[in-house]
Image (cartoon, rainbow, N blue to C red; front, side, top):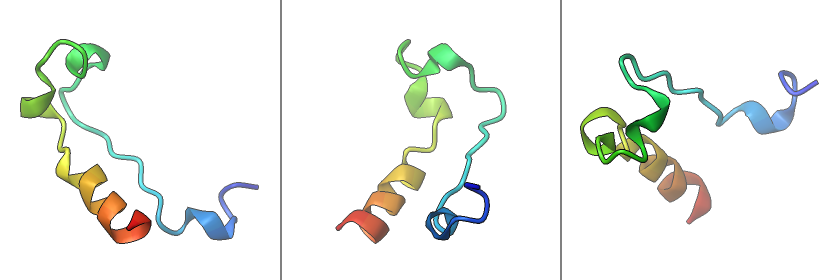
Length: 47
């Protein structure tokens, strides 16, 4: 089961209120999506 896996400790599902699926492709992503969260994850776990 994924929920009890040792690989789930650093996982998070970000829910962005008011965002829609096309925000990323329509150019409105900068004002809606908090890109600092994925950047922080990459710095912490992948460098």
